[in-house]
Length: 219
Image 1 (cartoon, helix red, strand yellow):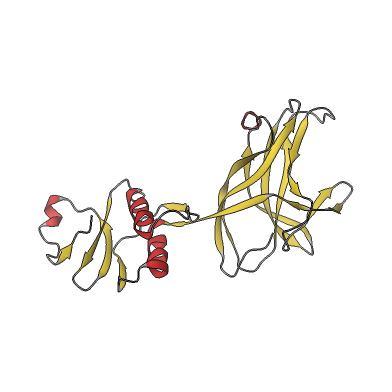
Image 2: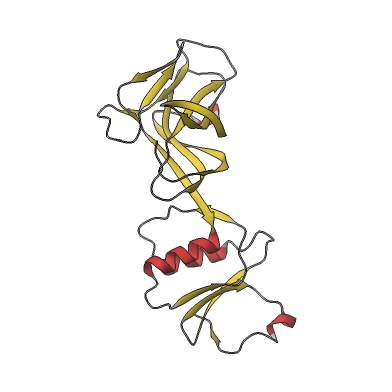
C-alpha cells in the first residue's frame, strides 16, 4: 500500500478474514518497508487471535505497535500464521478484490520467493494522532467561527484520526476532550472574548483563583 501526501502514525491494521475448519495458531500481521517491489524490513506487528476469527468473512483488527510512516511511500502488510501446524483442511482465508480496484498496491505470496497474485487485498490501515493535535486539525477544517486555537498543555494521548461522518466538529472536540491527558487529569475547553479556543488541563481550586476572568465556557 502507499501512504498519501501526509505522513501518519499507524496504530491499527484491519483485514477481512475468515477461517476454514479450525486452524491452530494466531494470525500475525506485520507492516514492512518496501525493497524494490517486495517486502523489506519489519517495522511493526500485531496479532489477530484465532478465537476472534468466527463465522464467515468479518473485519478484524490487529492492534500494532505504533509506527511512523512517511508520506508518499510504499509499504507492505504481511500475514503469517504463527504456531500450530500446516493443515490443508484448517486454515485462514483473506478476502480480496478480484477487480483489483486499489491502484497503489498488489498481492504477493511467498514460496521460494515473492510471486504476484491477481486482485487486491481488502484492508485498512488506521492512523492515530495526539488528541490535542486533532482538535487543531478539526478547527482548521470546520471552525469558521474560531480565530485561533491555543493548546496550553498537550494531552499526551493518541486517538484514531478516523471519525464517523455523522459527527459534527463540536461533537468530535467534546469526545477528544473527554479522553483527558496521559496523567489521568481532565481537559476543558473554553472560548475567550477574541474567539480563541483554549484547551487546558482542568485547574484545581488554588490554581483557578489566578486564572483569566475573560474566559467564556461554551458547554
